Image 1 (cartoon, rainbow, N blue to C red):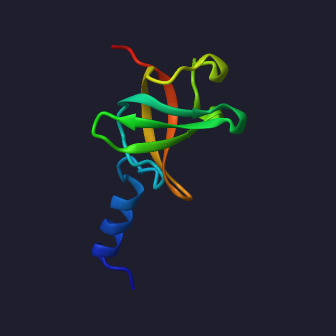
Image 2: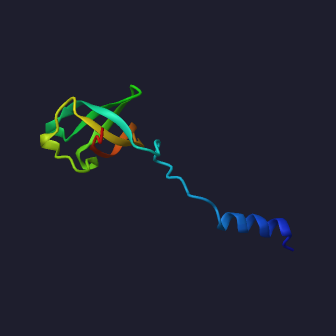
Length: 96
């Protein structure tokens, strides 16, 4: 027999708030600087404002041309969990 608590619990689940992406570590864009680019392999590393070093792949670039990208360029990014550690996503030119 179903109780009122069962009904309340199911109702609460159906109206649950935003579901978090388990792969995303940062919910807002972070500032960073291109630290190193390995052009022949199509990836590089970004140092975030808090000092974390994050891997990026050319496929994560938004509004940036990988071949024109220079070390030291300011970017905005989101950080995700990658197979081997933090990975940059949605890398775009810095607005500041």
